[in-house]
Amino acid sequence: MNRLSNPDLTILRKSASAVQQAEEQAVAPVRIGIGAIGRHHSSFVQLYYAIEARRTSAMPLVVQFISPTAGNGASTVASGYARVAADDCAQPVLYIDCNAAPSRPRRGQTDPEPTLYDALRRGLPLTDAISPAKDAKNLLWARLGPGERPLLALGGDRLQSMLDMLRASYPVIVLDTPPTEAPESAAVSRYCDGSVLVVAAGRTKQWEIENAKALLERLGGQTVGVVLNREQSVLPRWLGGH
Image 1 (cartoon, rainbow, N blue to C red):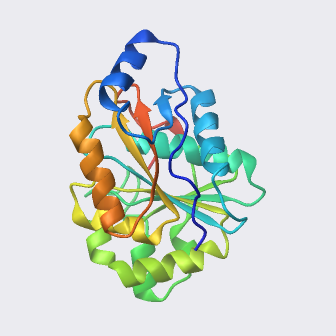
Image 2: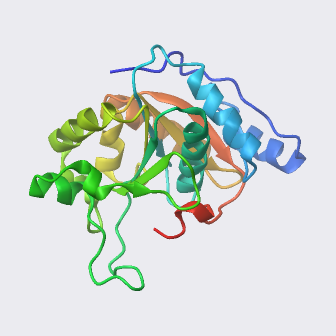
């Protein structure tokens, strides 16, 4: 497995005083951090290259984006990072949504789209569950599984097997997972090359960051940085159709 070196990342600060104040209150005592991330493309570029600088090899990379609690914008940061990675990579980048699946199919559909779990269970190619991300080039999208807790349904062994197969085709695989409040979500960290904690400015407490980091590492993962998300926001448009 390709591991990311030196989890003590440099903080990339924004100029806004409110964001700096929130960062000092919520993140400063933690010796990891990638700084304040807003909706601007340049912030995601900084995040992407901060992670790239810690890569120890050219092997395919699996990165998990996770928050201590819900509502911190982990999906926004994960999708922004994935889009920048897709722009930089020669081969397609894969974004996997590991969150709860919607209970109803999208408008105009009679059946829900197949998930990676469905493909594994039916013995189908994983590509049957992978489709181009909306309004993005070189970026593919897949949902991990059905139901409220798809990670729990899939299990560790099948997740490891699935990631091994996907590594053969994708240079970067982005896992957007539920918060560490879900034990199975925290356990995913052991199958990744690094986990990025996404916290909310002025909202996430210091003890929540420390507890989440300790849990990930206790379960065999490696925390490679903390992203201070400026505000809670909706998913970027290119994932809005999913």
